[in-house]
Amino acid sequence: MSEERVLCTFRVAEHLLGLDISVIQEVLRQQEITRLPLAAPAVRGVINLRGRIVPALDLRRCLDLPVAEGGRHDANIVAREREDAPVSLLVDEIGDVVTVPLELCEGAPETMRAAARELIRGVFPVHDRLLLELDLGKVLRVAYA
Image 1: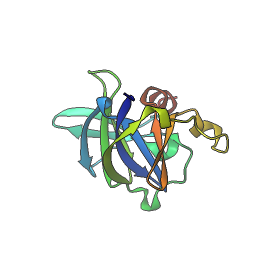
Image 2: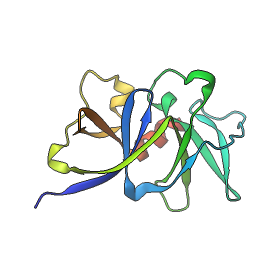
Image 3: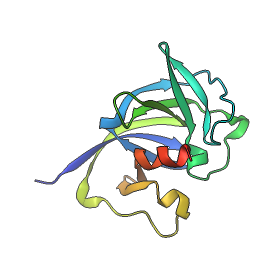
């Protein structure tokens, strides 16, 4: 019996990315972001999530990708590395929840930029594309640096 991983997928630029479903709290449409003075460059600001202030992180900056046209992101993935510390990841488009067999997992290709490669937990072939699984802990460390 092979082991599997369940991933919540989303698109940032032309990249299909995913996070383990166990760290996902919820998925939201675009939220109003309040700028946060003196924040790290990847911290676009904060969102109000039912009265709770949650940092909004720009995954494009974390992955060293060009800024979205007009600086717009259409969706937020609210994830948490710890139960008491949710974070909103700004993404271009929400995907599906997919189950991938762990035996198909490969490492990040050497052709990826080093900064982005460090954030990738594994790469899975899905249909005719590659799904890049992010390591949430590493994304947070880069975003807050």
